[in-house]
Length: 163
Image (cartoon, rainbow, N blue to C red; front, side):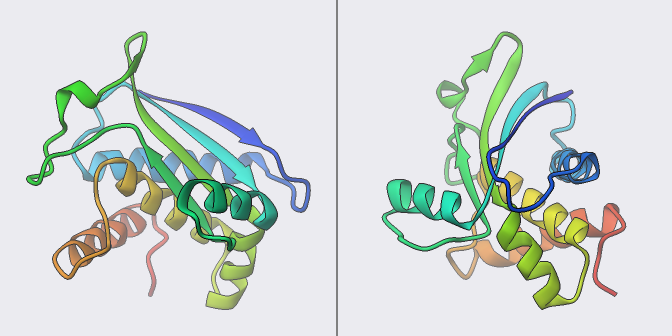
């Protein structure tokens, strides 16, 4: 079971139940693909706009620019991708995975730019961010193909794959 905490701090676009549901589905499907769906966990999702995410990006990464999604994992993993037990933090019986921050404004612009739906874009961003929460990255030649393959599998499983 995954418990979600949503906070919508922006007022540029309406954040609908459908949007919340696609994000929940993407996180849940990503956990299934990673064979972690039996893990009782909690994920916090902040919906913001370009100004909000730029501020967070500046304060946490020293990058003074907006982005589409940020991930703040709580868990740590060793070089083999195994969770370091001591890094786990719990709220009762729920393992805290971390925080996902999505600029809804940027997601809408990217959906239009890429020629697909906002639901597909939100699903992709949530899956991408969940992979980061679970220790995956796309910084090196070895890491990027693995992460991209997982993203593709999640999107296809959700019926949001590219044709």
